[in-house]
Image (cartoon, rainbow, N blue to C red):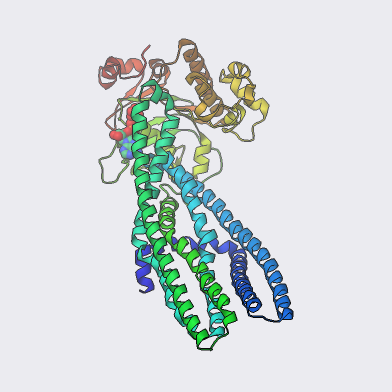
Length: 588
Ligand SMILES: Nc1ncnc2c1ncn2[C@@H]1O[C@H](COP(=O)(O)OP(=O)(O)OP(=O)(O)O)[C@@H](O)[C@H]1O
């Protein structure tokens, strides 16, 4: 069997992609491998010497010789202790440092490719790649690279010692060594398949669990507990079946490896007994030969164990690199502007866009503008293209035709940092991080002082309820902000946007119904936020729409009408029908 065949079957290509990441840790890795090799050499030498010592004692060797062997064994034991420590410390230091690097670069990659990527994948599955798949790679860095090198060097030492006793002995054991080393490769295709299957199923189960935990309120409210559990059970049962199949394969491999080792030992014992009977070697050497023939396999068996993991390692590497290699949907041009004040006049000029180039455009030559300080409400049926317009303003994707400008600048001529600096977003679904409310508000301006946070909260009408919380501003909101009402969360988001103090405001109005008091507070906070800012709002409430300077009505990806509420009602067109059919969320 040649290496090309191995590569094809075990998918070494994917495993190979992991090697460049060790570059910064070359020296430590080399030291770790040296320590591991010395550990094996010391270990086998001391076993051989111990066996020789027993043989000498049994056959009446000199006390002086036995004593010197004893001292040598003690020195080897100390050496081994030091080498085991050094190997474990160094290879794990390298492996875990690389895992830290991986998690950081993966997080950066996810940030770079979001949100286009996030829309296609489930967050639990992505989290599983960042945590579990990266963890699997530890096996490669800490227990595979070094183990392979040691598995070549250490057995050579043992074969040399055996050859020193008699030239025939390494020849007898060598075919069995080769057999033990190659058995895992017989199963490599299956291992690779099973590894891929298990990693994919683990990702799915992980995503189900994350979904289930995050959506627990909905599951309970809709009485879907049993059916959700059933779904989860099916997923875990399926995963379990794949893991059992993997267990069977591992058992078969383990059994065959053991059989090869046992046959090797029996053969060497038979040959050495014959050599003793023939008088070619000293009978005191028999225990040494037995010891050597047991130990000579151990580095190769270790490596066989890791070879069995190459399937999962390859599958995890593939999942990790599918994130790292996803192309960036939008890139900054080399000459993109990041400086200077820009007039906050937003202009959509014949904007065309489709999420998939082969599909029909979801925006078809959309043109409208939002003048500095103006508020424009985007309205339309579900699927009309309102969110798409907003996402394009944030440059989550680039337009496929036409342009969007702020002042004199095409968005593609601004750096993304500058653009995101200019726009504050208040979305429907306010995400609050698992940290204090103060820190959540500070997300809008990390360097904001406590006074600034409180001033923004007062304007957003959040201060009064915040100070009443158990730890006031220091209260931890918990995952997804479960301890706060929808209206309160929205006011925190408004405080966040206020503190950011960007000239442009992009709002996706919440569709959910708030109680009258919360509704009034949120509306007041929003008017405060809109003061002096250019605002584009995806509007669902008639009050918001009527307060806008201009209404842009989208219909099937086209601008159907533009005007004020009164003018559009008079026109008796799409807008009037939209209002009449009550498709505009909550009407007042
Ligand atoms: N990530 C996506 N990939 C592919 N198609 C998408 C994606 N997001 C939206 N679409 C499609 O683009 C069209 C416009 O969707 P968009 O979300 O902009 O509408 P909307 O007016 O905001 O609707 P809603 O009021 O329901 O949020 C729809 O046909 C939708 O199915």
